[in-house]
Length: 443
Ligand SMILES: [Zn+2]
Image (tube, rainbow, N blue to C red; front, top):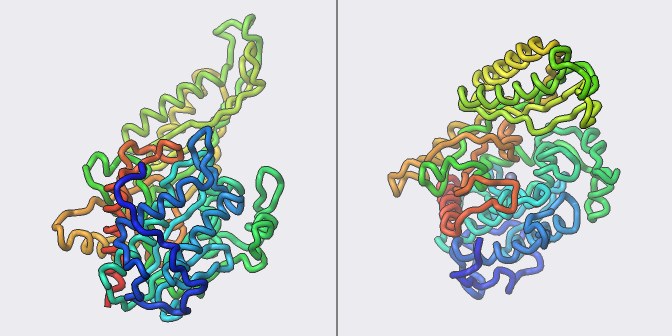
């Protein structure tokens, strides 16, 4: 996002060093008066923008518990304290900023994550956290009287760039990752997650499920940049998530016969590269028929010699589809094609499913409530769309009512420095989130 236009007053000026334990809305205005969410968004975006940005690639390297991540976390704490919100870090290192008494229960929580993939974009994660604080500012500017506690959360290690597992903070909280499993997570340098947390000044001893915390939450709404072009195609700045598509990874082992690339007659070969190549094309075809996606993005070849017919070609398929039936159809079709081509070339084939995540349906009642709130004044029907990407909201959806808002990404590019959302659309996202929080939590 370019930095122009609004020049809001900084949020940090009159920060109390520690906020009241149970602040309520409307908060006493700061000296500079309450900032509407659209203008405070720009200020926060500008502050966060340089942190962890690599000068060569222009991409972000905010890996869990590294210096860049800690700078982002400091920024989060500053934002919380500047607003007089009650700041806390939970047992799994997730950061919370509370407005109202958490113990009152039925809280409305919003937020996302601040970490990134290697050379990630600026928006995936931070857009949700910044928009959450801006939405609170917007509610304060409106003078909204709240009946339910509100919180902003920054879930730790969402991308899994360092320890290889995504959504560690929310998985631990939800009990979807055990303490023992978390303790075994290790980065490429051999540093374990507990040691990394310790080095960052956090206590890893308490890592584990946090049912009491989840029991206090009545709704979680995550705003996120769209990682696709559905909203660009419908012409809408904001959409509501329906579900996270079921997805999985399959390993295809084509076993042939290594031989000399110069002396072996074509008719005598058992070359596994040929059925593999046919299978890649079949995957594209099958996905096209079913509206799914299917990608062979990783391959290993043995012996991997330029003058040798391979003995083994191992390809990894990633496939995702709108529902289980479509996913079964596309993967079944690819496997059938792979077997036929393997047979035709006298090559063996083993297919192994290495991982699978079933469909995550977001809470229908909450989703419909969001649609009603966002359509109330405008009469506009906000598009409801599925996504092929995983999120903390997906992890939590099995435990508490969750929903997601997506902000238009005109190119659809994500996990890349080219990831983008226009300023106007970011502000539309802030205002939509503010409407949702107000609609859910207003007295
Ligand atoms: Zn994300």
